[in-house]
Image (cartoon, rainbow, N blue to C red; front, top):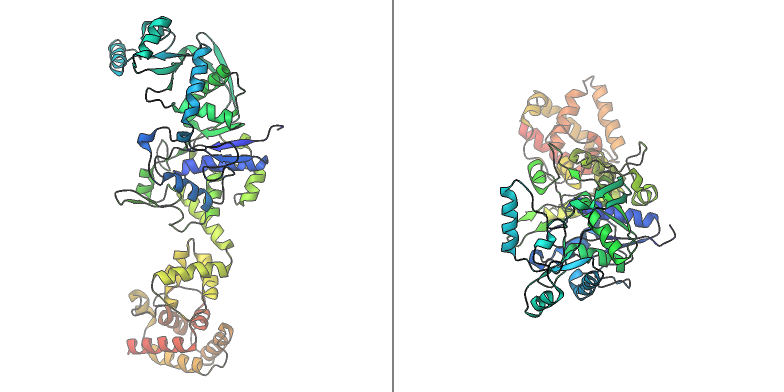
Length: 503
């Protein structure tokens, strides 16, 4: 590619960023970085009625958490700003006027009531009203009116919009990197509004002008924009500009049933559809992957596989590996079904890669939030439990007994483990443990197992009640490892408590 690659992610700040939007941003980022290009954030806020406070910051925070930062954005000017469309609004009228001057656009004075009446008449006849070549000369616009009549209406302050004049009788040949060749009969296109009566451009005009001025080389966006591609290509043609290359990404589909993944699916099946928590103005909280305990690397890896595959069996990719292997030609045309269990699998894989010291710091924060202080070394506890964990919270669920002495014992297990003579056996184990100089798990194991063998006793008679004594349930890592981590004093205290309980 001789021209420097420049791509943009252009969301509207109308609420929290859905993971479908995050996936679009990720694919733009991967493509840009693979080709040594720039990744730009442009905020498309021309529709001020739908603007939501905090949405723009949310987008920035989400991308930073995922380690896919922007090269240019409203807070990082790269010489192509401003990066909010609302701050660029003075630009667009000139371009709308240029289209009128070249005969590619026209003034339309039709009122909302008049257009509604046309729609109703068409519906009565079983037809769909389309404002284009077949009726534009019968409507109230500068193509049907004389130059003088048009100017008189403008001078009188009559509200108007500027519409694009779609060509008649042409076949438009377009190319999409993912979908290949696309052919459109221009007769089916309507004359879209480019400039509204409130003095603001519509998405279509602003989008094209901004992409041109920001030297965007590739437009990588969701499949929902595919119906707009013909108009956008025609606009580039009308301006006499080179169009960027287009790539329309497949939809992310519901885990069950048909249709696009939505917040309702997350509510129904209990998983987040947003990268970060979103707090609404009325106090509602929508959960995010970050706050639910996911690692950003796991979320990125999961999103990369929604619609793309590397063509190999490999599933775990660092961000650098994704950049190296990513190719738009390997993005599927068909929608990608969201698999929440697979998302958890990615999380579990990445949690295993986190070093024990880092995980211990994260686990310490969780203990602090629970108001627990401890002198126990957390690192070996985390190391012994993490292979059973998907989230840091799971380490607590699996190993809370290290920090809270059991006050009750699992009833079913106690019925099997605490029998006649068990109290005496546990008292003997406490005596053996008390006499040990070294409290390494291997030394505890050697001493206790040696005593069991010398007594010609079955191991189950000792090991099962000992585990229940220390844990309160039949779970956890090696029982002698548990004792070693608890320390001699706490181990003996727990045994004495169980002896009293049995007695």
